[in-house]
Image (cartoon, rainbow over all chains, first blue to last red; front, top):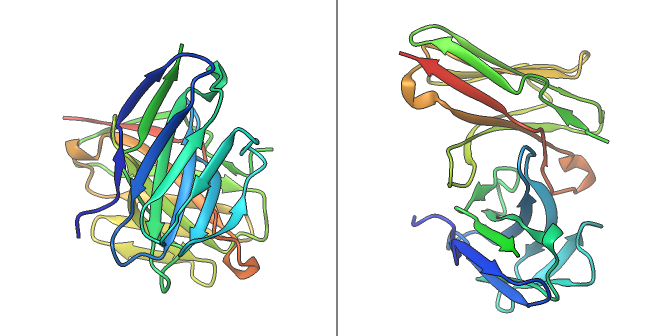
Length: 114
Length: 114
């Protein structure tokens, strides 16, 4: 069990650029979640996948955000036309079908938009 | 609307004593509760959970208590150790509604004094 991994760990980008983050869940987990955490707050839910199907999206996920999980394994989160307000830690988590309520988090990708 | 509240931003406890972290929630549909621990520059680490059909769950030094009538839960750590110094997040989900997302509190920073 290698845990949830995320890449990159840090990303600095200029406002208006597009960025893409990758998440590799624990191998036997079929559920994958994206959260965003800003300073002084707890993680906030963005979206979740069961296998390759995206089943729920938060209203926090504006049209500039898109997430995919093409083969039910790794997932990508893309932010288009980044804004300074997008600066945050983006966390990925995964869980198994039989204990879906216990989500295991990756180390996160810290995005800074300048 | 903060549905999960951790009203103490910080807590300091002497090594060897008991640490008690508190969490309140407002959504009566929440039926599963979790505690996560977070070190700087790492993702949250799952600690312990409790279903709403129970009022206590214990795992080693960690015990979670749930008072459904008061919509309150607490995490007890005994004895407290220096490695317990971290930010602790309370989280909740409404599994019976098929809702997979976790709603987090804002965290409590625990400092164990040697």
